[in-house]
Length: 392
Image (cartoon, rainbow, N blue to C red):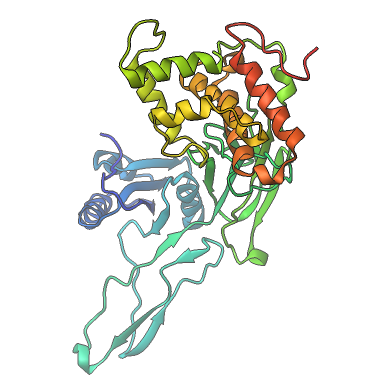
């Protein structure tokens, strides 16, 4: 039987239950947990830490559908908690005993129930007030439950276009980079370049993996501490910057086509003409749609006629000259003309051009024209080597 995991959608809750010789209670506890969580709106995983039991606790937990972690010998409740928490994958951690309960025996009165172990997590649902008196018929109070959220270490991997070693507005983030934590965890950056590790309090080192074709400009590893001095709070902004060395494009192969090629094909797509077409109208239309939705604002919402207008520009303004070559380069990217066969590097190259175009006022005419020349070289590669302005 597979471990018990629900499929709802408000985040993953890990329920950790240390158990020692609880064969008579463990099945009922698991069923109770499943009943409560199935009625909730949370995904969940159920982890039983079988702490060296000498009875059938582990086997019965497995039969009931829980994920079971085994200690060879009894190590105690705290060790069981640690094993379960380290193995947990959830955004939230719920801890309970194998019999599902904790109990205080009290006289009538007003009480506050709280958790005293500050090292378990940086956040939980807080102390809870309980009253037992005439208004409640002096009845016992149940379901005073606590849910923990473990601290996280998070950050971003980005293309440091400005070279200031900071993630700046409009700089693109990089998906698919392997991040490693010193405790052995690895994650991959998401579509927004973000990564997150869920951790226990302690000292850690975050390291960024290699990205082919890009150079690391920040430190390859960053130390992070989560402890009493930091109030066990999550740590964000552990960012890593990468850069393109565009001079490395010299001699690399690319199958780019010049701006005249794309102007001709887009114009014929607009006119509905098929004679002399190298790229059919449906493909041209799909490329224009992708360009209109790509990265930053310079070409946002552009249509086929707008693309032709950019490709046909007679302006001598440096930004307009850059836009003209960049438009051709964006068609080449959409057409799969990857520099040296590296899609990511080509995408970052295009992002670099869009960033310069959007922030043209921050760059000199010579800087914009140098960039224009590199896009021109890419566009005129025609399956051969790129011969940019700095190539020998």
